[in-house]
Image 1: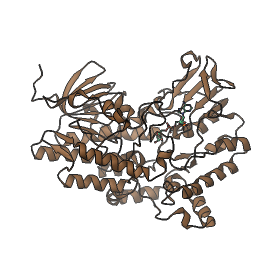
Image 2 (image 1 turned 180 degrees about the horizontal axis):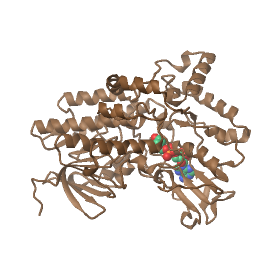
Image 3 (image 1 turned 120 degrees about the horizontal axis):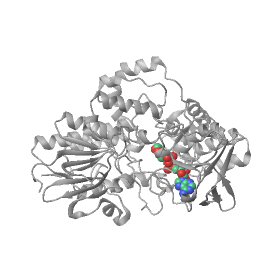
Image 4 (image 1 turned 30 degrees about the vertical axis):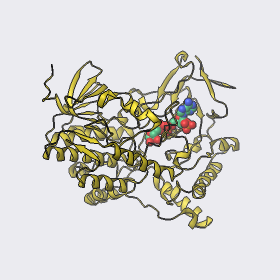
Length: 535
Ligand code: NA7
């Protein structure tokens, strides 16, 4: 019989990625007995699992940092403009060691269920090592793009070659030399992996369902002067990041694409193309809200594809026709150029779908592609997948999945909490802006808000906090209304859940901008956690 008054822990956190590590640090510092459970064998989260060739972050490394510690910020130096997977993993290991975090983490342990007991006002947490503990607070840092999507192709079990998913890449080196490789998927992961695999493989076939817009990353070693300047400006960077639209300090236009004449627009796009990185989607303010503006960016990239890709038929197949930026924008290193190589073939599986996987390779409706290796770059069950993998049950035993799938609508308050699930918080949850923000910046804001809320409760003798149904209704409505004013919901993507067959379609991200979001979160806290009930 468990003692009602003394739970095993004050807080249990899922995951030892950017979110879980910082949450653990904050809570421990504030004196909470905190335990992290991590399914992997070490820290890193997505950077522990996504070891595919070419894996690199699309955020500029100067901002891809925690800023909570000035000392850490000054000690760590990135090599490149865009940090490589291996280096990010080193960074997170460095953080774990510096702040002595490993002793609060149980690795190789997956949380399978979390049930709220109303009478005890405690969460009961169950793990795959058959243990069961209780906690007052239950916090998910399980990630919003961490549950891999392997499409249910007929016959995969018969395939005699090797197959891998980019989001669950083996730790040992995968050698493509002399191999016939197929990559399914051309999202951010496929776009990074394809040029690297093409250089190694004997032959590469890219199975593309939807062509993608991508702009050059223009990665390069960081200039020591820029590093010096950023370190000198630590306080300014820390202060300004939460006031930015997407968690990096970059130029953001307040100008419609339609205000410029075609010649000037061409110049603006060309300059952003040459500069590389995410300056391109921000050169005009209305690219994802105005169809005509959007078309100016889309047609610029289509023209680039036509110029870069030598075979006109391949170029045509690579040209997207959805609204630019309504699927996650991509950065690349010679992606379109890769299709000029003699050893690369583009298979359009929209026109000629994958019918099955055979023992020897991939069979589409009209052709057979013999393969030694298949790479699934088919993405993730985004935003809700990792939460639904755990049997999370709130008041009256109602499952989170049941609550959110009832009526097909995710419902949260600020993307941080949901009604009927007291003392449960989500870091980078659905209906938060996180996935469109530089992640460490978004995560710091979430973690600090949650830690602030817990500290407030402690100070005021409160033990439970819960989002009010009316506040959550208002937030979900507000989120949807913003999305509906944009072009985003018109395109199938993981933003809408459309990439997972059978998943209810709803817009899963707050599009009001990071600056507005941080202000709202701040105001809620300042108004004594308006919209939450504490008892
Ligand atoms: P994404 O962006 O979801 O891309 C997945 C790709 O796989 C995309 O091209 C999909 O085509 C394709 N896909 C998915 N299912 C199938 C099936 N059944 N048949 C053929 N092709 C398929 O995942 P990523 O890993 O690249 O990136 C995810 C995020 O991680 C990224 O946005 C960053 O935020 C980091 P579709 O476009 O759906 O037609």
